[in-house]
Length: 282
Image 1 (cartoon, one colour):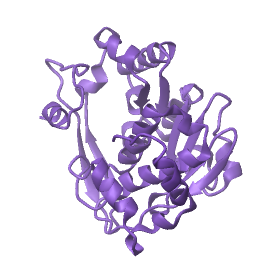
Image 2 (cartoon, one colour):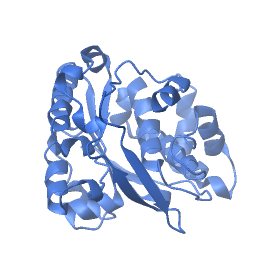
Image 3 (tube, helix red, strand yellow):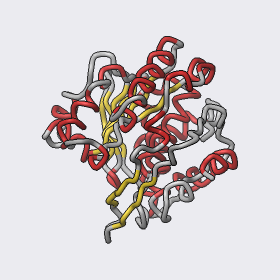
């Protein structure tokens, strides 16, 4: 069923593998009154935990412009070794490595193991996205403190992002740093918002990697990504609430209190820039 959903949304599925014995993992999500989530997982073992190196699709890895991954596949073998090998192959082929740790403490043996596992591949990523809660977990410091956040910025990193929910996100590169405001929406369910944010940003970096070197372009890309995440929170569920590009653009252009990002300086800069560049496809 999940594979069919991907096909229906025109996602390449030839790299998917099926296990003849293990089942697909299940995640049960409980919503709090404020739309935030609590997770319970069933995966002992699930098919993803049994992913082996010989099952990797090497052509996909070598042709990709970006390899995006989390940390959950690092918890057990053989998926950990498969994850590391996929990173190696993609990096050697010239792909950007994008890392969203996606902390799920319930899946790790302990908090200490989670911290160690997440940090074990930290310095290999070109792009790192962490939530404000993950910053607190990893550093013990204030995620609104740029000095604290820069402690996580390793020498080879090209772009680091700290998401702040409805407040937007902070961005850090070797040359500049800043903050892009979020989008005001009626929040129903925050499940999938971080993934939508990453998808929105990476879809644009894949088309124009110079976004990471030019602050005006980056600020618009993050404006777009914030809108992707915001729209995803307005409906229940993760996949059903993911927006298409037209929906995102309508929200960005909406001149009212529900789209405060239209007053952000990065928006005025984008208005001038977008007519000189090809349209980004999500």
